[in-house]
Image (cartoon, rainbow, N blue to C red; front, side, top):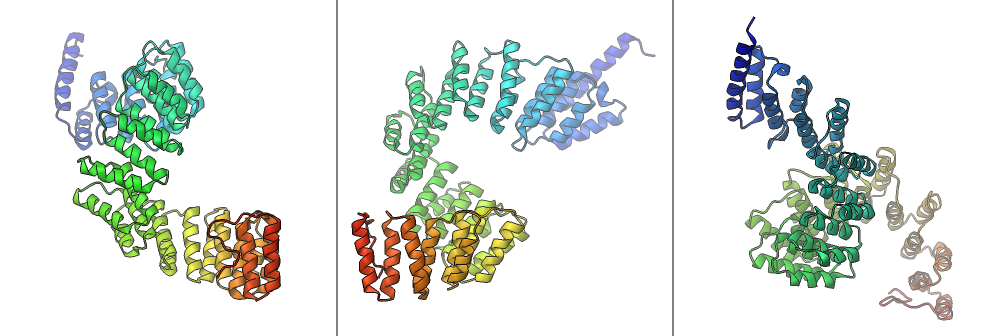
Length: 529
C-alpha cells in the first residue's frame, strides 16, 4: 500500500496533468474522449480531484455548444457535489429556453444536501422564474434571499425587480428597488422603467426616467417603446427619440415599431429609410415592423425594396422576417413572390404556414390554399385557429363548399379547436356565396354561441344576391331590431326591397331611418347600387 505522502504526490501529479490537458479542449467531443480515457485508465469519476470534475462539468454545461445530459451524468457521478457544481448546473439549466424552471430541482437538491446557497446561486434561479412568470416560486426564493441576508447584492436585486415586473407585480418590483436603494445601479433603474413601461404605466416609467441619475440607451428605448405602445402618446415617443444625443439600432427600431403598431405606416417607412441612409444596420424588429408597414400600405414596391435590401446586405432572413415577407407579398397580391420566399425558408412555424395559406385564400387561390393546408398536416406542423380561418376563407372565395365543410369538421374533431365567431362567419359566407341560404340559416340557428349581427348581415346579403326576397326581408327586419342605430343594417334591408322593386317598402325604411335619427356612416348609402 502506498504511504500517505506518496499517494498525495501522485494525486497532485494527476491533478496537474489532467488540468493541463483540459486547457486544450475546444469541443464537447474532445472532452468526452478525454473523460473516457481517464475512466479506462482506472480512475472512476467519483475519485477524480474535485477541481478536475468541476472543470469537466463547467465545460460540458456552459460551453458554446453545451451537452446538458452529459453534464448531468458528470454531476450525478460526483461523490460530494460542491456549491460550485450546484451553481454551475443551476446556471446551465436556467439558460435553456424550453424548461428553465428545472433549475429549481438542483436548488432543492442543494438544500437537502445541507449546502447553503450564496449570491451566485440566486440570479439564475430568479431569472428562471422571470422567464416562466412563476410568481409563487419567485416569492419563495425572495424570502430565502432575505433569510440569508443577500438582499443587498445588486445582481439579486436587479433579478428580483425583473422577475416581479415580468409577473406584472410592479408594486413588489418598486418595493425591492426602494429597499435596495443603497446598492441600485443603472441596470436597476432601467429594469424598473422597462417594467412600468411594459405593463402600460408610462407615467410611472417617466417619473423614474426623469429621476434617473445617469440614463443609458436601454432606459431611453424603454420609454420610447412604452409611449409608442400606448398609441395616443406616439408624439411623446418621437420627442424623446429626437432628444437622444446618441441613438443605436434599438432606438431606431423602437420608434419604427411604434409607428408601425400605431398604424402610422408612412412615418415608419420614412424613418426606416432614414436609418438605412445613415448606415445603421436594421435589426429583426425594425425589419419586421417595416415589412408589416408595407403590408398595411399594400405597397408592393416598398416591400420589394426591403426584400432586396435584406438580400444585398446579407441580413439574417430568419423565420420571423421570412414570415413577415410572405404576409406582405400575400397582402400586396404578389402570390408568386410570397411562394418563392415561403418555399425557400428552411424553417417554418405555424405563422409562416398561416400567412401563406391566407395569402392564397385572399387572392382567389382557394384550391392551392387547401392543398397547402393538407401538406402542412403531412409535414407535421400543427395548425391553430388562425390556420382554419385562412382555409375556410379560401374555400368560400373559390366555392369549395364540401371541402370547407370537411375542414370545419377536421378543426373540431381532429384538433379539438373550438370554433370562434370568425370560423362561424366563414362558414356562413361559404354557404351564402354558394346560394345555400337556407342551409346557412340552419347553421346559424344551431350555433352554440349567440350569433353576431354581422352573421345575420352576411345572410341578408346572400339573400339579396341569390334573390331570396322573403327570407331576406325576414332576416333584414330582425337585424334592424338587433341594431336599431346601425345605418348599415337599414342599408341591407333597403337593398332587398330595391332588388325586388318594392319601392313603397323602401320608402318605409328611409322614413324609419329619419324617425329614429340614425346617423349615416360616411360613404354608406341606403341603397347599394
